[in-house]
Amino acid sequence: MSLPVTVLPELTTPVYSVVIDSGVVLKLTKHTSEAFPATVCGLILGLDANSVLQVTHAFPFPPSEGSGSSSSNDDASAPRSKANLRYQADMIRLLKEVNIEANPIGYYISSYLGGFFNQALVDNLVAFQAANPNSIVLVHDVSRSSQSSLSLKAYRLSAEFLATNKASGGKFSSEAVVKNNLTYLDILEELPVSVKNSHLATALLQHLDSPTFTKKGDPDSFVSSSALAPNFDSLDLAIDPYLEKNVEFLLESVDDYYAEQGTFNYFQRQLAREQSKIQQWIQKTRSENALRERANLPTVSEDDWQKHFKLPAEPSRLDNILISAQINQYCNQIEEYSAVASSKLFGIQNGLDIHN
Image (cartoon, rainbow, N blue to C red; front, top):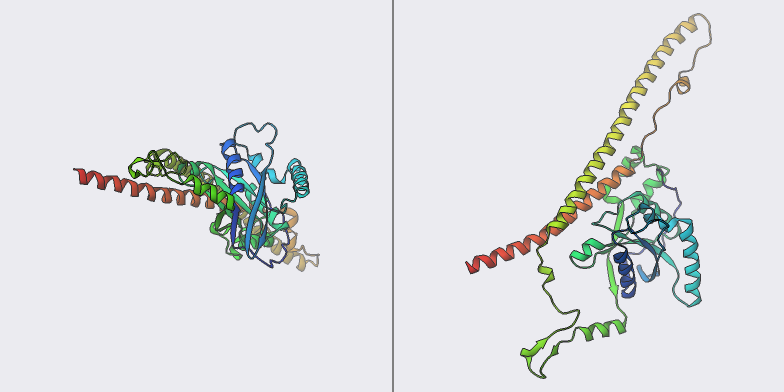
């Protein structure tokens, strides 16, 4: 599948970081968590100023008909569907009527264990960045957020990827990929994300974090009913399900990679066979032309091979690059989570050695 070729306007003030309002974070995490394990998305609004992209508002897209509660690839491409484009226009018009910032700067999606490298993501970002080069996608990993802290990351397509897309006409041929030095590490560019609270929200957090005492002035009577009170959840050692799923998805991605590589190898074999036939035809034509010249007969052009042979079309290398990026994502997650789990296990072992 080829991507649309777009001429991007020149960037005057590129952004290098993203600041998200805490209300937006709560809204999108609520939407993605309630719909889990289905893949859902929504539009994010805001503005870019002083090389900082400020996300001030967001709203979810309505679920597609018949999607139910199961994961659907249709939801991943929802930002560009005709129904959601009409819904987006109506929502932006209503937001402007109540003086809310209504400048689209990208969209957000939910993911499961970091599995968001796909064709739909690239297509959506190409379309968004064609309209606004500073557009981003916010990826909320619901499963990872449930295991540790909030997993919310911001990405945009890299300049190398957009240059390759333009040079290859959206087909990502091997020649274009090699010429632009495009690798799986150059698909997306991650931007640092920070969450900004309003003064009222900060005051509320300070109030919730205040300690309480059952007896006035007695420090030994400290109790905490606060939702922000320290707990021991971060010391949980239940790591098997998370790592098991990561390894399972990693193996599936490796199988997909070998299948994609097999398709490309088949193309190369077909191309070699056709080129061999063409060379044989050219050699035969040259011999016949030599005889025709001696007999003062018109010769046959060697370029006429195109009338008799057709070279196979080269498959796009984008799928191979995306699968490689997904494999790298799973490996990084396994490495990161295993490092945290290992430190916990070593801590427990040290404690057991002391008691023994």
